[in-house]
Image (tube, rainbow, N blue to C red):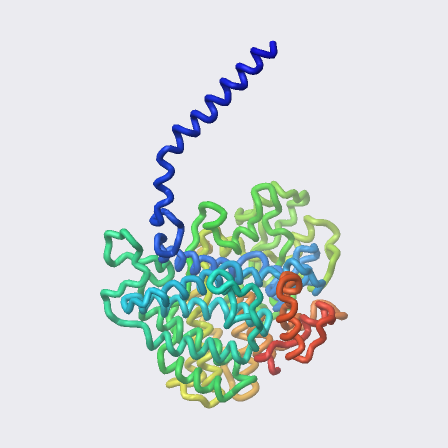
Length: 543
């Protein structure tokens, strides 16, 4: 018996090791350096595509809805889904989420910039300029969330083994970003032979990995100047001189003033990673309640109704038909885009009350019947992600004109162009019902009813219009509400809207000395609570 067992073990061993011997004879070829996964052996142009996707998708989705969307009153719910955005209850995981840019988009931008610089190839000048422009776009969102952050030494671990980067002050970060945009707009070459990010082995000489502007360098210049204008105006209360210089330079250089030039990332109804993050959030899983209890906020709904704003047609969804008394996850999935199951009367639209942790309606069914949902025909799975728009730029031009700065146009003309651009853009989404699209007559009537005005009234109008126009970009809306000092009611009587995010736990574990130096330089205690920290304004928030 023992002999039989021994023979079976020996036979199995012969098969095992014999198989490995035969299968690995040729693997020694992989010792050749050409097979190592290094930048030199890789198609680095793919990293630029991934950078665009990471920035576009990372700027949208569920967290901006439930956090910044709650801060600025777009959305409300009684569930714990919104926490920080509804009741202002601090949640470390949600707070830390935007910091993930360091291991995502920013790391890609830094790595690609480092690779391109080391190539010392003048034919890659446009690649380097576009990479640096995107690096600024990523940094802008990150610093506007947290204030002082590592920039000059950020993401250097694989380059020089620096695992503990120092923090840069936000005013220095802004100066660096503006100077970078100024330099890179000048660096972009108009040589048609220099197709940006034309990948290795490509047979089409005009093919590019640029999935936003398809290698159109004029549009990249407009985008860079638009970022410059956004940054300049955001710094205008903290450093008016610098803001004026760069705002005028950006406007003269040519910012985005037409929706055809908007920075837009396309999506499609395919894999989860390809769908619109906003739509995936609102629609939910196949077995889940599609709205996840999120309704339009009371203050936002009432404001649009008071203004008789035609954007209600695009933004407002319906209220569940009163005949439907039993609500389950499965039937809500069925009802989600069934127009017959909803009351679409805009005059009766009702926003959800802000800052409550209990269903204000007698039942779940009545909750859906009373409160207005986000429009499901706006949030479809292939909804494009529009991250920077002509409307935003025209509003900023109007504000610069109100400041008396050189803009080449009047504040009134820019204001009207901004509203027209926003209403036109909102009407362009393919999922909308025809009755939900805004007509030119409605735009004309709205402009006549709500002129810009002058002085303080003009600034208030611009702040309100920017707020409404940034509905599909809640994070940038939150930045602008803070910077433009737009007064919005608190969600809770015991707390005020957060004005920054607290530094993340990972930094407290891995980079504590540099974090404490940053806190000390700001005059803050390293032991203050997170609730205290999110009430401390960033540098540009001088209002």
